[in-house]
Length: 257
Image 1: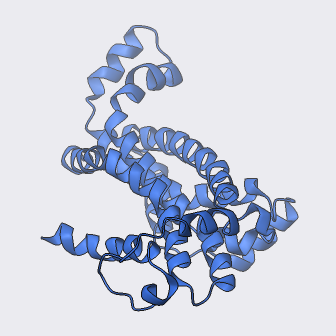
Image 2: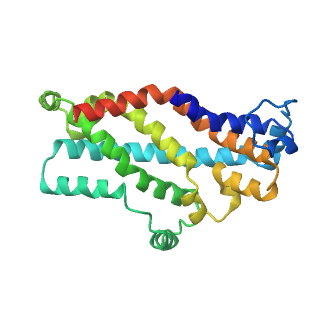
């Protein structure tokens, strides 16, 4: 029942995008008399969907890889090393989940590093925002891995890095998929970071393209909803394929931690 309630807004978006302009403005959850698939041609061309998709991929993929790599190493350290510094670092990262983004300070930092209005700057900011949450999820999972495996790997001559990549990392597959999908959703849906630190519209991601498209088609809701649907479609597909892993990874981490 709850699933149907959640699907109602999504169905409204899809059905409205296939109506003519006059009918779309009524915002009714009903099938169109005539399906106007040509609406998506206008959205694709005028909304620069392909350009926005490429920009989103160029930011999301490096951000996901970088945040997962850093979170895995930090989580392994926090789960295995129990010192005052590690406890402080864990609390510091957890606080980062709730601390708001300081726009002025980050703007000045990126400007001083010549990263303002670059994809690399946006990637670094999104990565910094994602690491605390990804680490929080992974720590509990890593703590559930028996320390005897570390000792056995050490006896076999493995150093810390070889032990992590050869023994620990393969066991993190469920929680890695969980954080990967969640990081993709965060990066793909993000508009704040890109808007503040990327002034060139040619580099804008899909959510910002929706905003730009809305300025040109303010009252034509069939086009606007078509742009919204194409923007959410990639992350929706990723979520549908990864939802089982998300549930398994979250529950495994909470139980083992």
